[in-house]
Image (cartoon, rainbow, N blue to C red; front, side, top):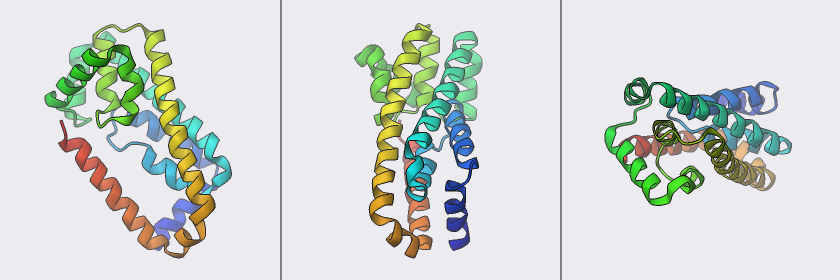
Length: 193
């Protein structure tokens, strides 16, 4: 476990960290079900100076992956629905919940989405399905994702500044705890409607 943890530390301080974050965030915006937050925070903790860069790269990846989901839903909503149900683990109750949120909040739902349990992919599917204007969705998506990712990166930055020695001393236990937390969140994300 410690070897894996030190590999994460090495990754955080390499040029590959930004690339990993970008593609992870892009995949999560389109099909992957583990949010990039779970890579962003540890990478920022172990490369404290890069917190703004990592947050920006994560926002950009999420933005482009989400726009891809939106465009596919715009062009072929039936294909995108079957794709989301089979690959991205999004079921009809989740989609119904997202539709309910969008009806209640209107376009502002895209600003609150980053702080909800509802998957971004489902929101982007409905944006494409309802033919929401691309400029409107792009602005709301970018703003919502930026607030979330910069907030998480700042938290990681603060934790890294204040607790990095303790984390490094107990790195194996911290990794196990982080993996269990990730598993819990992913399980809840899949199970909750």
